[in-house]
Image (cartoon, rainbow, N blue to C red; front, side, top):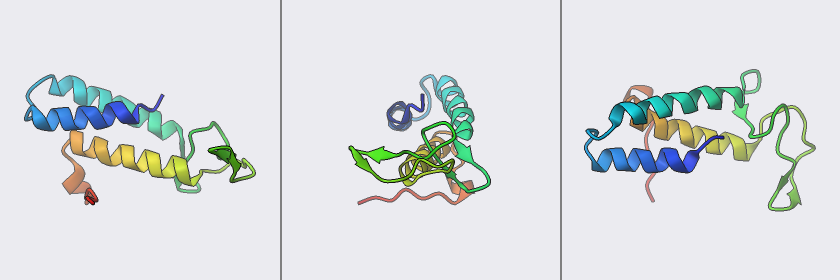
Length: 103
């Protein structure tokens, strides 16, 4: 499982607690997520998909792809978002040049 919601909550909890409460466990969890995310990455095409060896065929019941062996926009956006949150948890977001878009 990808656990994007857990990563988001851990990031904000960590910030609120000034990175003092169980930070090592939070970082270990985040690093484990990166290993899982890598399994969903299509290195040759530069994107992600939630499904194994195919793009998501439907989104909210509407057919959006042929389900070919390629990444899809939804997976790519979600995984990149997760990676950007993990970069904040690991305090490497500035080093990577990641900036959070705020509305």
